[in-house]
Structure formats: C-alpha cells, structure tokens
Length: 373
Image (tube, rainbow, N blue to C red; front, side, top):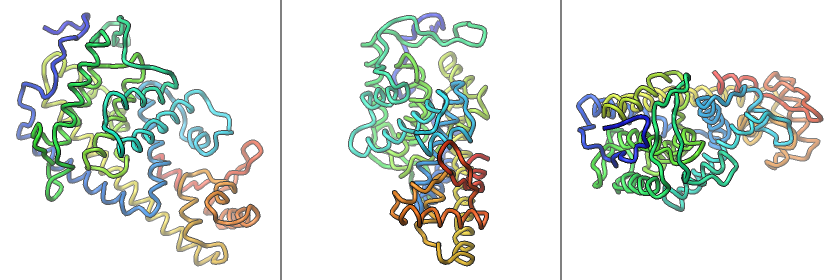
C-alpha cells in the first residue's frame, strides 16, 4: 500500500503490470507519431539548423526552468545567450545552463548510451555542482501548504538499482523510431510504442527522483534525448515544457494518479497529446521562420545586392541578437565590412541597432517575435 509519508522504495519497475496500450492510447499514438515525424522532416529541411539548436532550445530551457519557478524574460535571456560578457541575472544564467546540459546530452548520445552516468552529468551541468545520486534521507515533495504529497525512494543502492531497471527498460528494443507512414514504432524488446515508452520513462524518472535537486529539468531533457536516441528525432527540437506549463495541474495530477491509483492510461494520453500538440506548434513555428527568412533574403538581394550573401542571412537568423564580431567569426568579412553590412540591414529595417554596454547589437525583431510568441 502506497503511503505518501514513507519512502516509496517499493516503486515497481517498468513496464507496468497493467495494460497500457489501450485502444485510446494506440489511436493517440498514431496521430502523435505522425505529427512528430512531420516535425522531424521540417527540422531537417531547415537551411540553418544551428538556429534551431541555439534559439529554439533556449525557449525550451526557459519554459522548463519556469516550471521550477526560475523566471526570466525573453529579452534578458536572449541578451545573455548572445554574449557571456553581458551582465545577466542568476535566473538567466541558470536557464542557459539548461541549454548547455541539453546540448551536451545531445552530443553525448551519439557516442554512449543514455544511462545513469549521463543523467548525473546532465544534472551537474544544470546545477553547476558535483551533485550525484541521493545518499541522505529526508527528501519529500510538498504542495504549496507544506503538506507531503510524495516521498521518493531512499538509499543510494536502492535508487541506483531502480535507475538500472529504468535503463534496461529504455534500451529493451532494437528498432528505431516510428513505423511505416508515421505510425507507432515497435521493437522486439518490450513491444511498446516508443512514445508510450517515453511517457512511462518520464513518470519513472520523476518517481525515482534520483538527485537532491534538478530532477524535473533533468527528466525533461531525458525525454528529448530518448526520442533522439530511438530515431524519432534527429535534432533536439521537441519542447514539451510549454505544454506542461499550459496544462500544469493536469501534469501533476497525472503523476499523482499513477502513483496512488495506477492510472497509467490517462497519464500516457496526456503525454501523447503533449507530443502531438507541441510537434504541430513547433512545426508551424519553423515554417513561419523559414518564410520570414526567405522574405528577408529576397528583399536584401533585391534592395541591397552589394551586401547580400546566403551566409549573411543565415547568420542574422541564428539568434535574434547579432553583433559585428559574430559575422567576423563566421568568416563573412573584416570588421569594417561586417559593420557596413549590419548598418545596411538596419537601414532597410531588417535589423534594429541598440547599444548595450560598450557594444552595439543588431536585433532581428521579427525573428524575436516568432521565437517568443
């Protein structure tokens, strides 16, 4: 019997004993998989994929941190991301560490498995400490009134054992990604759809609660990396945190009901809907960015052919804040030439110049609006 005031050392390993892939879940898995496959294809067609990783990841970092009540404005965040020399709040720096951790994980899973060692490194990057699996007792999850709503497992050996079972479940299948036509993808291990497995993995990671702090953000990074690892994405561009913020009560209620009632079906449906809606929204966002980029390219080529180049357009769409040094580093020209190009783009109204400290930054306001809407 679950008791919220006692460590949940009896947390069962995955897969659940209950039937998870109900008719409703399988139906939703099909539409979610198709939406995710369309997002994957759209991201691969993006001419400047670095922009997706630099700027869209930043929005996921901000939203994921907001869930943990770490708040910063978009303007402050993009300024801090554009130049480490600029002053920034502790909150903005912490959000940037989330992006660093996600990008680090994305690079690492090309060479090593998504496992406990990497989970720990991700948490360490987020918290900038030598945090590891919890060793001391006393961790509790409380509500706004200070009442205990969940007590995670205790004891380093217990927690590591549960993480080992989670790893085995995550890697129990050999087959990649989605099935034919964007349908559910299955492997010979658990036989479960990959998106269904992601929902189960996310609950289990949160229930194990392996670290003293940073569990929520680490777990949301694991979601993205798992989909990349299983081939459903090639770039880490599925950002579920905004959906969680928009449906926060249902998110926490879903986690609670799995623990206390074994209500796996509703939880999986919630996560599948998050994947579907987020995929559709992000795909539209990428479509709009590509359309804006093409419109700016055509206008600059037509009205300022002397400064136009494909590389210049891609550089001013890498992130909303640009400065002369960025163009220099990209090999677009000398400092004098790059300054001339940016001033010309400012004259056209493509960029807006603003002095911040000793530097002049050229802001792509239309891109900023698309990224932050």
